[in-house]
Length: 106
Image (cartoon, rainbow, N blue to C red):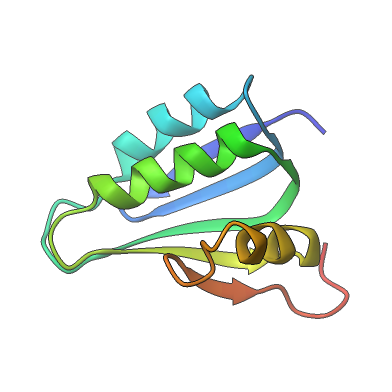
């Protein structure tokens, strides 16, 4: 599946495909467009269709989290088991708000 990141509205981005060294710059550009402007707002990434993530993909998520306005939060919605494990191993499951995918969802 080719990589896709779409800013649906301010604060919501849909991400699909492989999040890696090749696609991270496209995600970063998309996130800058969707970044909430008001303090305390959340940036939600719907990642249910992400099929792979490497360290560069994680770095893009960390950078997005650091770029949020004061009091903001990065929410990963629809996290698949492989990504949940990766976030846990990297210690990022406590940095981001992680919402797991529904069983059977892909």
